[in-house]
Image (tube, rainbow, N blue to C red; front, side, top):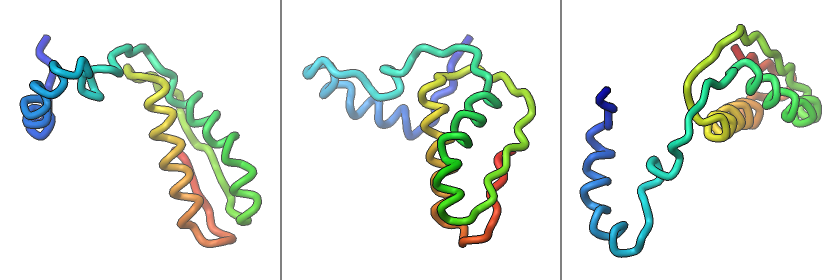
Length: 102
């Protein structure tokens, strides 16, 4: 199976190949190889629970309507992604607003 690599990553890879081989470093996407079946709805539950206090302080209704979803990916990276999305939503929603995670 051939992996798709967006053109900008190919350019980054080619430009950094000489630097990374000299320094022994690998590209960021090559260091995060392990992927598993990740229950995305569980990650969403964790992230919403962790941000509940922030939502209460701003008087924002934080709702979770996630259906069961299993994806292939890196659970830690997906957790960071969801955390950033929810954090930004809470940060830029005015008091009394609503944030729904679907």
